[in-house]
Amino acid sequence: MTEVQPIRDYNAYNGRMELSMMDKLFFVDKVDTDLIVDFGCANAVLLKAIRTLKPTVRLVGYDIDPTMAGNGAPEFPVHSDWEYVKAAVKDSAHSTLVLSSVIHEVYHYGSKADIDAFWKKVFETGF
Image (cartoon, rainbow, N blue to C red; front, side):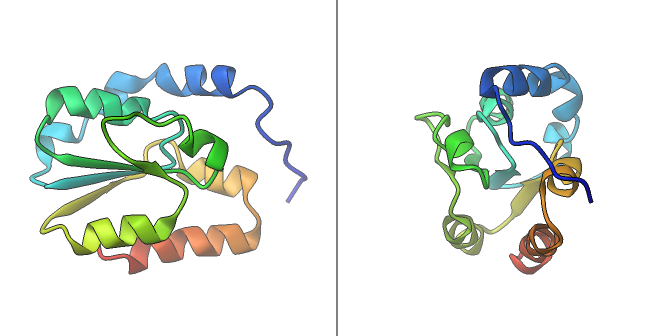
């Protein structure tokens, strides 16, 4: 694995991620859920778009990067603490995990331990 450079310009990074927003929303009308967790939510723009389509669904953003998590939206929580997400899932009857544009990020920016931790979160949380 090559050494990975950290994100240098968060605005440019988030702008590139927002380009395919309509494609990322393909699932919204296909899920019956009371909670949507966006894993790797960055600046929460996907959650903001979901809010317009599913105004009654509880939304939670998660990003391992505290700088990204700090760029969340006041209308729903964005965290870098997975324990918060686990508690939200436990309190939910039907939860949905969104991994839009994140798996390749984990493999690109993460170590082997980071990758293992990612999959553990995905499969052991109860979605």
